[in-house]
Image: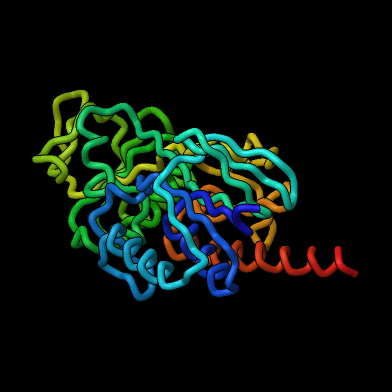
Length: 304
């Protein structure tokens, strides 16, 4: 067997999982394509001990920490296929070769699909955002908007006034109920039903949104919930069950990040309906520890 565990995905979740296994002196391979979901964000916030650092800088530090352990190997390569059963997994790589492992940790994240609106994609992660806890403070209490795609916009619009005066742009995708209108009014949220047709300002910054009737609304930040889907197909290939979250499917796991397939664990945005750097790292810690314990107890039971 080439490795005890192959970790597929080398961002916060995958690296945190690999750290637990490295410290248990297990042979670990981390596969990563160096294209994390957070690569569009200039800085990471709300991550204890890392607040305000660039995501790439945090990852580089985590990798450097891991490289101090001699049983860890990194490969910047895509895993294109996976098969097998508990104790005997094979992962096919884009270069054409295969690696074998006794356990797998899936941490390859999700892909975002954004609304098809001129000027939106190039501002993603800077002035077009999804999480006020991650990015709201830096907008300095300037005017903010919520671009509705579904009823979830109500939740965002209720939260955002703590970070700045908020306009809910319904986009004909969401019609608040009378109770929701009352609550939004108590929060001081302005409702705008005329569709947004474009974004104004020197990209990646935002100065205003253009409406279909020619009006503009000054905004420093526009919040939107992207649709999400797994960034790879390996969980499906292996037979892992998924659940439907508020923005898309995610891999079903138990309290210790075990999937529905024995020997396969998953962590991070791939296995959670709530994307968050701290939670992804914590889930990776759980997945790495659980993978190690499964190796220990399975071997002990086999020898008994």
